[in-house]
Image (cartoon, rainbow, N blue to C red; front, side, top):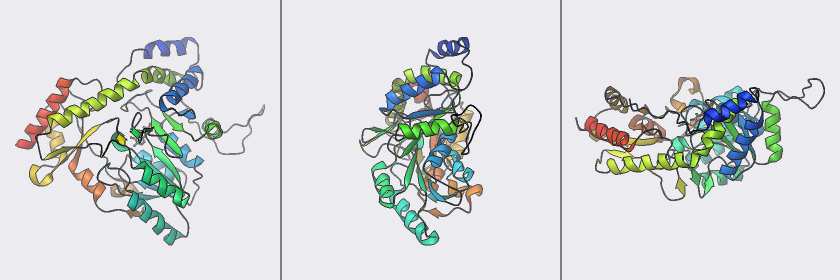
Length: 375
Ligand SMILES: *Cc1c(COP(=O)(O)O)cnc(C)c1O
Protein backbone atom coordinates (compact mmCIF):
# COMPACT_ATOMS: atom_id res chain seq x y z
CA UNK A 1 0.00 0.00 0.00
CA UNK A 2 1.34 3.45 -0.92
CA UNK A 3 0.00 5.68 1.86
CA UNK A 4 -0.74 9.40 1.67
CA UNK A 5 1.64 10.49 4.44
CA UNK A 6 2.71 8.47 7.46
CA UNK A 7 5.01 9.37 10.36
CA UNK A 8 8.68 9.07 9.51
CA UNK A 9 10.95 8.27 12.44
CA UNK A 10 14.12 10.32 12.54
CA UNK A 11 16.41 8.11 14.63
CA UNK A 12 16.67 9.66 18.06
CA UNK A 13 13.02 9.32 19.14
CA UNK A 14 13.56 6.24 21.28
CA UNK A 15 16.72 7.60 22.86
CA UNK A 16 15.06 10.88 23.88
CA UNK A 17 11.85 9.21 25.08
CA UNK A 18 13.92 6.80 27.17
CA UNK A 19 15.74 9.78 28.63
CA UNK A 20 12.43 11.44 29.44
CA UNK A 21 11.13 8.29 31.12
CA UNK A 22 14.35 7.59 33.02
CA UNK A 23 14.46 11.12 34.34
CA UNK A 24 10.83 10.51 35.48
CA UNK A 25 9.79 13.68 33.65
CA UNK A 26 6.72 11.94 32.28
CA UNK A 27 4.47 14.80 33.36
CA UNK A 28 3.50 17.82 31.31
CA UNK A 29 6.40 20.29 31.25
CA UNK A 30 10.00 19.37 31.70
CA UNK A 31 13.36 19.88 30.01
CA UNK A 32 12.32 18.47 26.62
CA UNK A 33 9.52 21.01 26.32
CA UNK A 34 12.02 23.85 26.78
CA UNK A 35 14.44 22.19 24.38
CA UNK A 36 11.75 21.60 21.75
CA UNK A 37 10.67 25.24 21.94
CA UNK A 38 14.29 26.32 21.66
CA UNK A 39 14.85 24.17 18.57
CA UNK A 40 11.63 25.37 16.94
CA UNK A 41 12.63 28.98 17.62
CA UNK A 42 16.05 28.34 16.17
CA UNK A 43 14.56 26.82 13.00
CA UNK A 44 12.00 29.61 12.59
CA UNK A 45 14.43 32.44 13.47
CA UNK A 46 11.79 33.54 15.93
CA UNK A 47 12.22 32.88 19.65
CA UNK A 48 8.77 33.20 21.15
CA UNK A 49 7.23 29.78 20.53
CA UNK A 50 5.03 27.90 23.03
CA UNK A 51 4.58 24.13 22.68
CA UNK A 52 0.96 23.04 23.12
CA UNK A 53 -1.07 19.83 23.09
CA UNK A 54 -2.49 20.34 19.57
CA UNK A 55 -2.65 22.70 16.63
CA UNK A 56 -6.32 23.18 17.44
CA UNK A 57 -5.39 24.33 20.96
CA UNK A 58 -2.92 26.77 19.40
CA UNK A 59 -5.64 28.28 17.20
CA UNK A 60 -7.91 28.55 20.24
CA UNK A 61 -5.26 30.38 22.30
CA UNK A 62 -4.18 32.49 19.31
CA UNK A 63 -7.74 33.78 19.07
CA UNK A 64 -7.88 34.37 22.85
CA UNK A 65 -4.63 36.36 22.60
CA UNK A 66 -6.00 38.30 19.63
CA UNK A 67 -8.78 39.44 21.96
CA UNK A 68 -11.67 37.49 20.43
CA UNK A 69 -14.72 37.45 22.71
CA UNK A 70 -18.25 36.05 22.70
CA UNK A 71 -20.41 37.86 20.17
CA UNK A 72 -17.48 38.84 17.93
CA UNK A 73 -17.14 37.86 14.31
CA UNK A 74 -13.93 36.22 13.07
CA UNK A 75 -13.00 35.85 9.41
CA UNK A 76 -11.74 32.40 8.38
CA UNK A 77 -10.54 30.96 5.09
CA UNK A 78 -13.31 28.66 3.88
CA UNK A 79 -11.07 26.12 2.12
CA UNK A 80 -9.44 24.43 5.11
CA UNK A 81 -9.73 21.70 7.71
CA UNK A 82 -12.48 22.37 10.27
CA UNK A 83 -9.90 22.81 13.07
CA UNK A 84 -9.09 26.27 11.62
CA UNK A 85 -12.66 27.34 12.22
CA UNK A 86 -14.00 25.40 15.23
CA UNK A 87 -12.13 27.39 17.93
CA UNK A 88 -13.97 30.54 16.78
CA UNK A 89 -17.15 28.84 17.95
CA UNK A 90 -15.52 27.57 21.20
CA UNK A 91 -15.15 31.26 22.12
CA UNK A 92 -18.80 32.09 21.44
CA UNK A 93 -17.76 34.10 18.39
CA UNK A 94 -19.09 33.44 14.90
CA UNK A 95 -17.17 32.65 11.73
CA UNK A 96 -17.37 34.70 8.54
CA UNK A 97 -16.07 32.59 5.66
CA UNK A 98 -13.92 33.87 2.80
CA UNK A 99 -13.14 32.20 -0.52
CA UNK A 100 -9.71 31.34 -1.93
CA UNK A 101 -7.94 32.65 -5.00
CA UNK A 102 -6.88 30.20 -7.71
CA UNK A 103 -3.08 30.57 -7.60
CA UNK A 104 -2.34 29.66 -3.97
CA UNK A 105 -5.73 28.07 -3.12
CA UNK A 106 -5.62 30.30 -0.02
CA UNK A 107 -7.54 33.36 1.17
CA UNK A 108 -8.44 35.80 -1.59
CA UNK A 109 -7.27 39.30 -0.54
CA UNK A 110 -10.09 40.97 -2.50
CA UNK A 111 -12.85 38.84 -0.95
CA UNK A 112 -11.21 39.40 2.45
CA UNK A 113 -11.51 43.17 2.07
CA UNK A 114 -15.06 42.86 0.75
CA UNK A 115 -15.96 40.78 3.81
CA UNK A 116 -14.43 43.29 6.24
CA UNK A 117 -16.28 46.24 4.69
CA UNK A 118 -19.54 44.34 4.42
CA UNK A 119 -19.45 43.08 8.04
CA UNK A 120 -18.80 46.62 9.28
CA UNK A 121 -21.91 47.75 7.38
CA UNK A 122 -24.01 44.84 8.63
CA UNK A 123 -22.96 44.84 12.31
CA UNK A 124 -21.38 48.24 12.97
CA UNK A 125 -18.13 46.54 13.98
CA UNK A 126 -15.08 45.13 12.28
CA UNK A 127 -14.36 41.40 12.69
CA UNK A 128 -12.08 40.73 15.68
CA UNK A 129 -9.53 38.53 13.90
CA UNK A 130 -8.62 36.83 10.63
CA UNK A 131 -7.61 33.14 10.35
CA UNK A 132 -5.58 32.63 7.19
CA UNK A 133 -4.33 29.16 6.20
CA UNK A 134 -1.31 27.93 4.20
CA UNK A 135 -3.10 24.95 2.72
CA UNK A 136 -1.04 21.85 1.93
CA UNK A 137 2.04 23.95 2.71
CA UNK A 138 1.46 26.60 0.03
CA UNK A 139 1.97 30.10 1.47
CA UNK A 140 -0.99 32.47 1.27
CA UNK A 141 -0.56 35.98 -0.17
CA UNK A 142 0.66 37.27 3.18
CA UNK A 143 1.84 40.70 1.99
CA UNK A 144 -1.62 41.68 0.76
CA UNK A 145 -3.44 40.02 3.65
CA UNK A 146 -1.28 41.72 6.30
CA UNK A 147 -1.68 45.09 4.53
CA UNK A 148 -5.48 44.76 4.55
CA UNK A 149 -5.52 43.57 8.17
CA UNK A 150 -3.43 46.49 9.35
CA UNK A 151 -5.52 48.97 7.35
CA UNK A 152 -8.54 47.94 9.47
CA UNK A 153 -6.60 47.16 12.67
CA UNK A 154 -7.50 43.44 12.70
CA UNK A 155 -5.25 40.74 14.19
CA UNK A 156 -4.12 37.86 11.98
CA UNK A 157 -3.82 34.27 13.19
CA UNK A 158 -1.76 32.36 10.67
CA UNK A 159 -2.68 28.67 10.51
CA UNK A 160 0.64 27.14 9.44
CA UNK A 161 -0.34 23.68 10.71
CA UNK A 162 0.48 22.21 7.29
CA UNK A 163 3.25 24.65 6.43
CA UNK A 164 6.16 24.18 8.83
CA UNK A 165 9.22 24.96 6.68
CA UNK A 166 7.30 26.95 4.02
CA UNK A 167 8.34 30.54 3.35
CA UNK A 168 6.82 33.69 1.89
CA UNK A 169 9.30 36.38 0.81
CA UNK A 170 12.01 34.53 2.72
CA UNK A 171 10.03 34.55 5.98
CA UNK A 172 8.98 31.30 7.61
CA UNK A 173 5.22 30.69 7.52
CA UNK A 174 3.81 31.07 11.03
CA UNK A 175 6.05 34.06 11.83
CA UNK A 176 4.33 36.59 9.55
CA UNK A 177 0.93 37.06 11.20
CA UNK A 178 0.35 38.34 14.75
CA UNK A 179 0.14 34.73 15.92
CA UNK A 180 1.19 31.57 14.10
CA UNK A 181 -0.04 28.01 14.56
CA UNK A 182 1.87 24.77 14.05
CA UNK A 183 0.64 21.17 14.33
CA UNK A 184 2.62 18.02 15.10
CA UNK A 185 -0.23 15.61 14.52
CA UNK A 186 0.64 12.18 13.14
CA UNK A 187 0.48 12.94 9.42
CA UNK A 188 2.08 16.40 9.44
CA UNK A 189 5.64 17.01 8.19
CA UNK A 190 7.03 16.31 11.65
CA UNK A 191 5.11 14.78 14.54
CA UNK A 192 5.16 14.50 18.32
CA UNK A 193 2.38 11.86 18.06
CA UNK A 194 0.04 14.75 18.87
CA UNK A 195 0.90 18.34 19.57
CA UNK A 196 1.09 21.89 18.33
CA UNK A 197 2.69 25.25 18.96
CA UNK A 198 1.72 28.91 19.06
CA UNK A 199 4.22 31.38 17.63
CA UNK A 200 3.86 34.64 19.56
CA UNK A 201 4.88 38.22 18.72
CA UNK A 202 7.09 38.68 21.81
CA UNK A 203 8.18 37.25 25.15
CA UNK A 204 5.33 38.87 27.11
CA UNK A 205 2.75 37.25 24.86
CA UNK A 206 4.53 33.89 25.05
CA UNK A 207 4.56 34.07 28.87
CA UNK A 208 0.85 34.82 28.83
CA UNK A 209 0.19 31.80 26.56
CA UNK A 210 2.21 29.56 28.91
CA UNK A 211 0.12 30.87 31.80
CA UNK A 212 -3.22 30.36 30.03
CA UNK A 213 -2.25 26.87 28.79
CA UNK A 214 -1.40 25.66 32.31
CA UNK A 215 -4.76 26.45 33.94
CA UNK A 216 -4.11 30.18 34.51
CA UNK A 217 -2.74 29.55 37.95
CA UNK A 218 -1.45 32.71 39.64
CA UNK A 219 1.87 32.71 41.46
CA UNK A 220 0.58 32.16 45.00
CA UNK A 221 0.97 29.32 47.56
CA UNK A 222 -2.66 28.28 47.02
CA UNK A 223 -4.57 27.92 43.75
CA UNK A 224 -5.80 31.36 42.83
CA UNK A 225 -7.40 32.32 39.54
CA UNK A 226 -8.34 35.64 38.03
CA UNK A 227 -8.95 34.33 34.54
CA UNK A 228 -10.21 31.21 32.75
CA UNK A 229 -7.40 28.78 31.97
CA UNK A 230 -6.83 25.80 29.71
CA UNK A 231 -4.95 22.50 29.99
CA UNK A 232 -3.15 22.83 26.68
CA UNK A 233 0.57 22.40 27.37
CA UNK A 234 2.59 19.76 25.50
CA UNK A 235 3.87 16.81 27.57
CA UNK A 236 7.58 16.24 28.11
CA UNK A 237 7.42 12.78 26.46
CA UNK A 238 5.79 14.22 23.33
CA UNK A 239 8.36 17.01 23.27
CA UNK A 240 11.14 14.40 23.42
CA UNK A 241 9.78 12.90 20.19
CA UNK A 242 9.58 16.42 18.72
CA UNK A 243 13.25 17.11 19.57
CA UNK A 244 14.25 14.06 17.53
CA UNK A 245 11.88 14.89 14.67
CA UNK A 246 13.04 18.46 14.24
CA UNK A 247 16.62 17.28 13.69
CA UNK A 248 15.40 15.89 10.35
CA UNK A 249 13.09 18.75 9.39
CA UNK A 250 15.32 20.43 6.77
CA UNK A 251 15.71 17.06 5.02
CA UNK A 252 11.99 16.37 5.24
CA UNK A 253 11.19 19.67 3.53
CA UNK A 254 13.76 18.94 0.82
CA UNK A 255 12.29 15.49 0.21
CA UNK A 256 8.66 16.73 0.01
CA UNK A 257 9.76 19.39 -2.47
CA UNK A 258 11.58 16.73 -4.43
CA UNK A 259 8.45 14.53 -4.51
CA UNK A 260 6.47 17.49 -5.85
CA UNK A 261 9.16 17.99 -8.52
CA UNK A 262 8.90 14.34 -9.51
CA UNK A 263 5.12 14.54 -9.91
CA UNK A 264 5.50 17.73 -11.97
CA UNK A 265 7.96 16.00 -14.30
CA UNK A 266 6.08 12.70 -14.58
CA UNK A 267 2.71 14.33 -15.22
CA UNK A 268 3.99 17.13 -17.46
CA UNK A 269 2.80 15.45 -20.66
CA UNK A 270 -0.78 14.97 -19.46
CA UNK A 271 -2.69 18.15 -20.22
CA UNK A 272 -5.87 17.14 -18.33
CA UNK A 273 -4.07 17.16 -15.03
CA UNK A 274 -2.27 20.13 -13.46
CA UNK A 275 0.16 19.75 -10.58
CA UNK A 276 -0.51 22.65 -8.22
CA UNK A 277 2.62 24.79 -8.18
CA UNK A 278 4.02 27.95 -6.61
CA UNK A 279 2.81 31.13 -8.38
CA UNK A 280 6.29 32.71 -8.21
CA UNK A 281 9.59 32.52 -6.37
CA UNK A 282 8.18 34.58 -3.51
CA UNK A 283 6.24 31.46 -2.50
CA UNK A 284 8.23 28.52 -1.19
CA UNK A 285 6.01 25.59 -0.18
CA UNK A 286 7.08 22.65 1.97
CA UNK A 287 4.70 20.70 -0.32
CA UNK A 288 3.37 18.81 2.70
CA UNK A 289 0.97 17.25 0.22
CA UNK A 290 1.38 17.40 -3.54
CA UNK A 291 -1.99 18.19 -5.08
CA UNK A 292 -3.38 18.03 -8.60
CA UNK A 293 -6.50 19.27 -10.31
CA UNK A 294 -8.25 17.72 -13.27
CA UNK A 295 -9.78 19.25 -16.32
CA UNK A 296 -13.25 17.82 -15.75
CA UNK A 297 -14.43 18.31 -19.33
CA UNK A 298 -11.67 15.97 -20.54
CA UNK A 299 -11.41 13.49 -17.69
CA UNK A 300 -15.07 12.55 -17.31
CA UNK A 301 -14.50 11.13 -13.84
CA UNK A 302 -14.84 12.77 -10.46
CA UNK A 303 -11.85 12.96 -8.12
CA UNK A 304 -13.65 10.50 -5.85
CA UNK A 305 -13.98 7.99 -8.69
CA UNK A 306 -10.27 8.43 -9.41
CA UNK A 307 -9.51 8.04 -5.70
CA UNK A 308 -11.35 4.68 -5.64
CA UNK A 309 -9.65 3.42 -8.81
CA UNK A 310 -6.26 4.25 -7.27
CA UNK A 311 -7.25 2.58 -4.00
CA UNK A 312 -7.93 -0.66 -5.91
CA UNK A 313 -4.29 -0.44 -7.01
CA UNK A 314 -3.09 0.01 -3.44
CA UNK A 315 -2.61 3.78 -3.66
CA UNK A 316 -4.10 6.03 -1.01
CA UNK A 317 -5.12 9.54 -2.09
CA UNK A 318 -7.38 12.05 -0.42
CA UNK A 319 -9.98 14.51 -1.61
CA UNK A 320 -9.36 18.22 -1.07
CA UNK A 321 -10.75 19.65 2.18
CA UNK A 322 -14.43 20.35 1.67
CA UNK A 323 -14.82 24.13 2.17
CA UNK A 324 -16.40 25.31 5.42
CA UNK A 325 -19.19 27.17 3.58
CA UNK A 326 -20.24 23.75 2.19
CA UNK A 327 -20.41 22.20 5.70
CA UNK A 328 -23.84 21.84 7.32
CA UNK A 329 -22.40 22.92 10.68
CA UNK A 330 -21.42 26.34 9.23
CA UNK A 331 -24.44 26.75 6.94
CA UNK A 332 -25.48 29.97 8.72
CA UNK A 333 -22.08 31.65 8.49
CA UNK A 334 -21.86 34.59 6.07
CA UNK A 335 -19.76 33.71 3.02
CA UNK A 336 -17.85 36.04 0.71
CA UNK A 337 -16.59 34.58 -2.52
CA UNK A 338 -17.19 33.22 -5.98
CA UNK A 339 -16.81 29.57 -6.87
CA UNK A 340 -13.06 29.20 -6.46
CA UNK A 341 -12.84 26.90 -3.43
CA UNK A 342 -15.89 24.93 -4.62
CA UNK A 343 -14.07 24.32 -7.91
CA UNK A 344 -10.85 23.23 -6.19
CA UNK A 345 -12.84 20.80 -4.03
CA UNK A 346 -14.70 19.41 -7.03
CA UNK A 347 -11.64 18.96 -9.27
CA UNK A 348 -8.67 18.37 -6.98
CA UNK A 349 -6.91 15.45 -5.34
CA UNK A 350 -4.04 15.03 -2.81
CA UNK A 351 -1.38 12.55 -3.87
CA UNK A 352 0.85 10.37 -1.66
CA UNK A 353 3.62 12.70 -0.46
CA UNK A 354 5.16 11.12 2.65
CA UNK A 355 8.92 11.14 3.07
CA UNK A 356 8.96 7.36 3.60
CA UNK A 357 8.04 6.92 -0.10
CA UNK A 358 10.70 6.14 -2.72
CA UNK A 359 11.09 7.65 -6.18
CA UNK A 360 9.72 4.35 -7.55
CA UNK A 361 6.59 4.72 -5.42
CA UNK A 362 6.02 8.21 -6.84
CA UNK A 363 6.57 6.95 -10.40
CA UNK A 364 4.05 4.18 -9.73
CA UNK A 365 1.45 6.71 -8.52
CA UNK A 366 1.97 8.95 -11.57
CA UNK A 367 1.68 5.95 -13.91
CA UNK A 368 -1.49 4.67 -12.21
CA UNK A 369 -3.01 8.14 -12.32
CA UNK A 370 -2.40 8.42 -16.06
CA UNK A 371 -3.96 4.99 -16.64
CA UNK A 372 -7.04 5.82 -14.54
CA UNK A 373 -7.55 8.97 -16.56
CA UNK A 374 -6.94 7.36 -19.95
CA UNK A 375 -9.77 4.82 -19.69
C1 LIG B 1 -3.92 19.51 11.24
C2 LIG B 1 -4.52 20.86 11.10
C3 LIG B 1 -4.97 21.61 12.20
C4 LIG B 1 -5.12 21.02 13.57
O1 LIG B 1 -4.00 20.53 14.17
P1 LIG B 1 -4.15 19.38 15.30
O2 LIG B 1 -2.75 19.30 15.83
O3 LIG B 1 -4.60 18.14 14.62
O4 LIG B 1 -5.10 19.86 16.32
C5 LIG B 1 -5.42 22.89 11.99
N1 LIG B 1 -5.45 23.43 10.77
C6 LIG B 1 -5.04 22.77 9.68
C7 LIG B 1 -5.09 23.43 8.36
C8 LIG B 1 -4.58 21.44 9.81
O5 LIG B 1 -4.22 20.77 8.71
